[in-house]
Length: 456
Image (cartoon, rainbow, N blue to C red; front, side, top):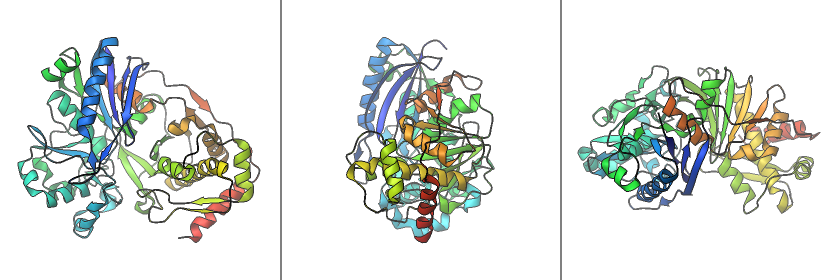
């Protein structure tokens, strides 16, 4: 393939267009905040603002770096009901709590956890519950619909006019996929999705050339291809699948902290701990655990900026001040609890408290997940937080901890799909993390764990 690869990266917080050379070099980038429209009829993604951004960004990027392929990657738990003209219902924001009203009836439809390895989650974090709620509230729209498209595939459809389904999105705690069998769960039939589900296509498949309208608006070569697209956490995993031997664990950080343990079995996953099996681009189940660490970190620090230093971390540990879960409304093993800060701390030490909290939660979930062997690779926003990596290295001395210095890791991984299968490029430099030297850290962890257990 001659030309650059553009990645539309729709995260929960920001929307980015990043353009890469085939060797993985980042050539161009632009981003905007990802705005949630409050309604009506429910909180939803502002897809037209994203589309306007995408077209303008493609036009500007292509002028500097001719684009040969476009890969969409998005957060999970989002999908689009469409007919030939476009959306029939808005793309729901997964934090919309209104879907909980159908939980009694949905619980009867939800397949058992051992089938889907998809835990019951609040709000719209199970895509199947979103669909069931929309189907019940808007039966006319469902009757008129041609396709239900998961979110990356909605964007590839808008770019190419070709509809597809894809396993990394279907297999991301949707209740719609049976990962060990590699097929739809019984819920898909219960919701009559067979009529609305386009053919399964691999994340790397070229669905077709961009439409004439997209070519005209952006100036891209009309032969530029739209790829099917991929779940964002699975995009982060791609370079490692191409280059590493199992076992290893990716600590993907952002709004969510998602632990993806390659080479760890899925048989022991526990629904109550928000453990699940994601599905990689090849259709293989990956043992995962998650909590909303980035959101919780922000809730604890408030308006503070900067990174925690060693002195402030030592003050928090010595004081035994504790941040106890949960500081976010959705997801994680303690989602039903209300976050609490015990003890007195100076306002400037809240960043240290938040860093300790996320490190301790990550350590706890790695242990519960069974990810006790192999390297730990931190990616995303916390990769730039040296204190977080060094705390994790101290908490898990039998494992090597690395920080990826790649703020564009998700999009860079997605760009690799243009060469998949078999493609690879040099991974971004990984910095080993030396264990932080805090004498009482083990005792602090024990106190934190005891306080959590006492709150159960």
